[in-house]
Image (cartoon, rainbow, N blue to C red; front, side):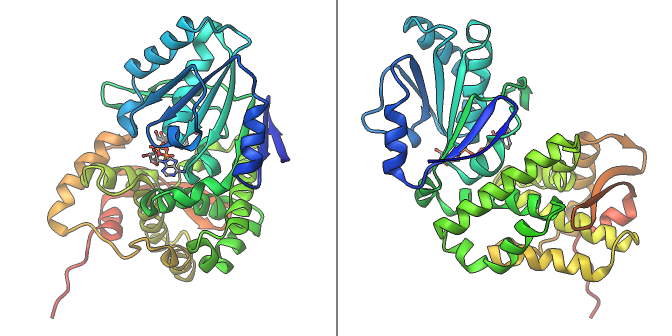
Length: 343
Ligand SMILES: NC(=O)c1ccc[n+]([C@@H]2O[C@H](COP(=O)([O-])OP(=O)(O)OC[C@H]3O[C@@H](n4cnc5c(N)ncnc54)[C@H](O)[C@@H]3O)[C@@H](O)[C@H]2O)c1
């Protein structure tokens, strides 16, 4: 086991394989509550009692699940010194940390993220949350875990859709980083990344967390929303059939294209951003059908600060450099809608 770094009160540790993880789990003691989803519950056998197994997916991030966790904790006589252990993706980690933050006014929290999204992004920063009345993460707070235990070997069983969705956040961090190390790894090791080579993926996760940590410590957290303005519109338009990560990638690519068309960056830079994502099976050329422009515009207006014709967007103008830009509707249409081809 290796300690990677500390962020706030949280210690980030990594283990090489399941055997080491299993050894660590043996040290957790009895005063704990396990929280998993129906997939991740199968990873620890037998799963110690008490435990709460929630349904998979975003639909579980709600008050009913939160109450169930608190109910089991009370019934098991757990106290302030108890540890809630979240074993799972971002859904399990977000709700475990929220439950830990309010149980007995705050008990201990240990996260074992099992998706690349949770390992490379969600486990750092202490954001907790559940969805409420259709609003994502409407209820939550900031509560750093005491410990985060990373075991990249767990990613072997992750479905492709989840793997590439989470990978998108790591590539986003590579574009935001002031150091070139993560970026170069993404560009040079693409075959190993697609093959899920464990050493390569472990390095990506470490570098991704280090980048996010640096961004948070520099109070630049708003840049982590790169790609979200267009990406969340696409998510809604496609009825959440495309993964969150795919949509964010699309948002980054289209907003960089817009940046080039508005003179904020070179065309070669915008083309290069496409080339960074392309080897990872993202549909970098996708554009919204012309007939859906009104729908796109109405969702955009609902999601964002709307000042009649301009939308505030984050635009990547160079590696590590993001500017906020009020884009006009014509420019947005040009960047996101398929062009008419005259024959
Ligand atoms: N707190 C934060 O800073 C932060 C950041 C990013 C995302 N999030 C949150 O994270 C959530 C998304 O997280 P996610 O992408 O990890 O999704 P998820 O937690 O829903 O997991 C995706 C799927 O993968 C399955 N799974 C998990 N680990 C597996 C493994 N090792 N092998 C096989 N299957 C496995 C899960 O059971 C689930 O079906 C969202 O709710 C989002 O709001 C939070």
